[in-house]
Image (tube, rainbow, N blue to C red):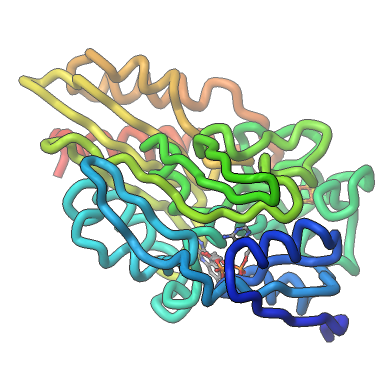
Length: 330
Ligand code: FAD
Ligand code: SF4
């Protein structure tokens, strides 16, 4: 049963931002696919829900080589956009490999960036210790059931994975988050938006209470680049990633002239693999290159018994997407 709460629907962005910023008990509601589950489960109990779903932040605009995506655009709308299909194909793939059509018609892009972890201990407030839900209480996943957990950016404090598929190609692309607060607007690169758990797993990103995501700016890939999203999971559909890789390659005469690579299912934040990119850039298309990049990307994992298998699986995921994109394996 949910704790009673007040529901309000402001008419404009400024009104919404003021309502949440001035009230620590208030929370935004967009498509509700994450927020309402967490309230039903008793993980969150806001006193006031501020419905932003009808604010004018929905739609996609192209300006030169950039897409501007309103935070209330649905996952299904972004996946259907022709420029996305043509110039950042892996964004479309990541979206369509997530959730279900019904959910994607409700779920917004802003909400996707801010979805909470699927860690079962976080989502069960009657249960065990969880530093993310109750700071300082410990982490039940360390010795519990941890198959879907993180191996990069993880520590004894928290091994929860950031479960978004969409964010994986978005960090690879250097997408930028635009934010409205009571004091004005600011923008933050998505690669700097998420915060590693370290000793405060309850803090997940740089947003202040009440700051609203208004738009996400997505740079398009150069014409001729190939991109792909490979998602490895236990079931063929309707399941979060065990590991995933989002990659974009520009190849000229058998040489990789520009590589972008990010990993999902393995990081406490959507994981940009910059050291692997450095190995790929300027290297010849070959399995040796791909394997070297994969080794570097997974060089320093933090594992528990349930997640050890992910180290090799993630490496193979990287090699496989590289082979597919470069045409060295069909
Ligand atoms: P809400 O639930 O309304 O909000 C989520 C959070 O974000 C809340 O804290 C809310 O306050 C905050 N918020 C929302 N919008 C803004 C904004 N503009 N500014 C500031 N704060 C905001 N995702 C994947 O990537 N891959 C999957 O495979 C996948 N599978 C799923 C399967 C199921 C069964 C479910 C329930 C979800 C799945 N998801 C998956 C997650 C889904 O994509 C998110 O739940 C959804 O995108 C959240 O969007 P929403 O509009 O419903 O957000
Ligand atoms: Fe909580 Fe993180 Fe541990 Fe899960 S992994 S129980 S979210 S502290």
